[in-house]
Length: 108
Image (cartoon, rainbow, N blue to C red; front, top):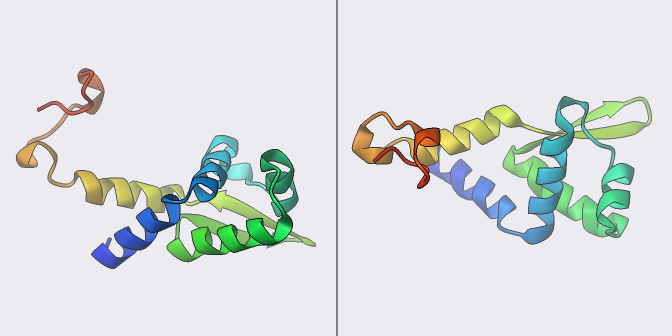
């Protein structure tokens, strides 16, 4: 993952509503959600939701697929894993970290 892609992805998540949308998509998994379901769940106007979904899709963190007359949005787990990999690439000065083993999160 390139630095510009990382900045775009982090920027997309650095807005409260977009973070809520992304987390909702992560929770439902591969089935994804329609804009109507997201709108109902988060209580946001359609135009606002459309703007934020466009930003998330543009960042690569969310995919959009047409299914009949509906659009289905899904979290792009591979892209998030790339982002996490970029952020933790040099964790613990390059040594292998056992993230779950310590309360602080890093095996340093």
